[in-house]
Amino acid sequence: MPSVRRKAPNKIKVLNRMIVKVHKTDDGRKVLAICDDGLLRKKFEEGNNQLDLTSSFYNGEAKNEKETIEMIKGTYMVNIVGEGSIKLALNLGIVDKKNIIKIKDIPHAQAILE
Image (spheres, one colour):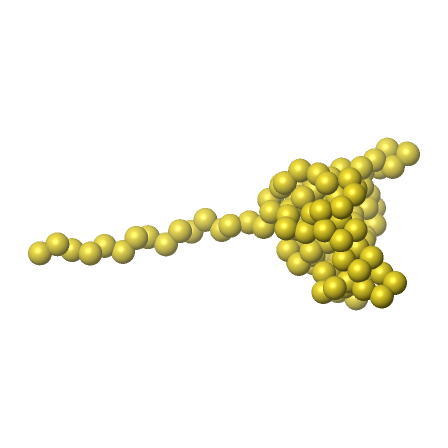
């Protein structure tokens, strides 16, 4: 009689993909623009507020959470957009919930880290 084996559960955690772009201030400090992968090239407007992810400011490279965390090290300022990216920032303690705004239900925050 053939036996049925259950496949072992996949224990690899799928990490959120984010788009990360590095900018430098005039005095050489690093500024990161981080947004959820699915939000790039979109624009959100609500009242007088606008969140424009169509410009080159957020158009960087796809990174997973681990890579993004490494890039945050030594950063002067971060601009963060999207549920996954904001969740990571909250978990790292670099953003406080009270400093998150939402435009069309898309969370956005800025933080100075140095």
